[in-house]
Length: 224
Image (tube, rainbow, N blue to C red; front, side):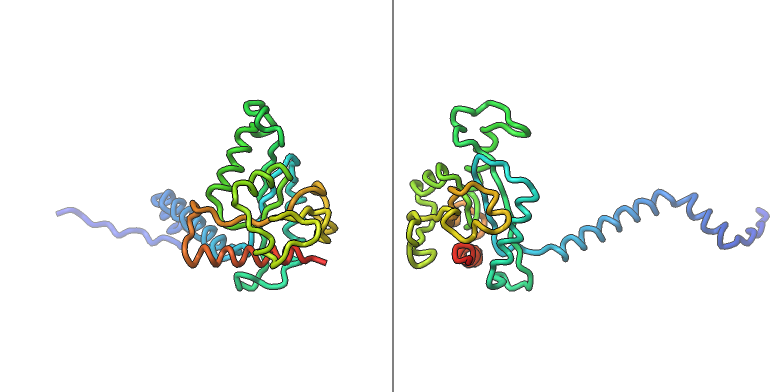
C-alpha cells in the first residue's frame, strides 16, 4: 500500500505563483479575448450613426483637417437631427480625380493612380446611397447627363437664380463663407444624388436614408 504524504500548506502568494506557473498561457489568452470583447463593445455602443454623407469629387486633394472643418460646418448648419439619435453627425468622403483623368490613366500619383481614383468615384456613384455631392463642374456635367442627380425643382421646390438644373456653385451660396467649404474651388457644385439602384438598402430603409440626406442638403443650400 502506497504511503500518503500530506501536502504542505501554501501561502496565498505561493498559490498564485503555482497557478501562474501551470496556467499562465490560458490566463493570457483569456485576458486577450476579454480585452478584445471590451474594446469591440465600447466601439459598437459609442458609434454615432451619421445623419448624412458628403462626397467631394474633384482635382483638389482635401486634407483631413479640411474634411473635419466641412463636417463641423455642416453639422452646425443642420436645423434638426434627421436620424433622431440626439447627435448631429456628417461623414465626409473625398476622391481626388484630375479632370484630365482619361489621358492620365496609368500614371502614378502619390498613393494611387488616376485609374484607382476613377474607379473609387464610379463605384461610389454606381453602388452608393443617396448623398450630398460636392463636384467639380466636369463631373457634375457627367452625372447630370447620366440622370443620377435630383433636380433642384424637386430638392428645393425651385431653381434659385444662377443655379443649374441640379446644382448650385459654392460661390453663389452663403455656404462658401463657412470653414472648410471656403477651401474648395468656388466653381465646385453642391448637388444631390439619387440612391443607386445597386445600393444595399431597399424599400423603406432606402427612402429613410434619402429623407435624412435631403434634409441636410436643404440646410446647406439655405445657409445664411
